[in-house]
Image (cartoon, rainbow, N blue to C red; front, side, top):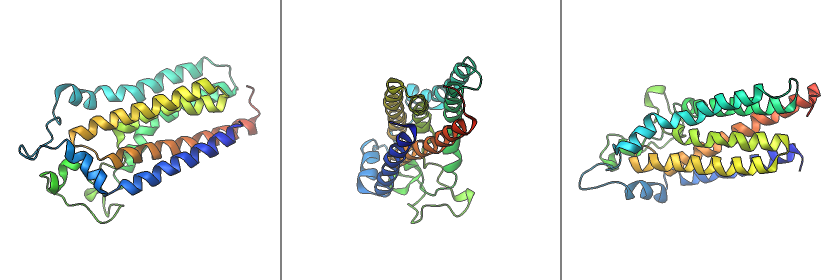
Length: 228
């Protein structure tokens, strides 16, 4: 399958993921999953400050995208100059490092708050009836999840593998990226920092960003007639 078809199918897949995230938003399942980890008697999320989960979320999680980006940049540097291999690995490094940052910027533009800030979970905020925030001061700072994006950033291997025609690498990257993103997101759900919809939205944002980035890189490689 040619790369532009990979991108087309991938964009369609992540567009469906975006629709799923939209359908989950404000839904009963979205609230119910977070409620499952909420202790009504203690009026708190018991795992919010669990030592390992808290340390992982505050420190270790960021080594995945930014450490991974550094490693992929090294791989790109070792590839032949003016080759699609160098471009693909450089693109993977760029995607891995910038993806969580993009999610971090995007979440300051949306209104949906964190579960632990909602009045139904002993917080002070109510669920806003609108998606986009009216000001940065009113932003929910939760959708999409930047922590989940740190796991979904491993989709860099999927896009690089697809561009290079390496199916094994592509499938490995797809599985690793989805599993890591969902795992990182789940840990934030149990702490009360995110809803499921915010984690799924992170997958959609990173996936569509990757499709756009690598489509542009592939077109540039064809225009420049880079060697394989």
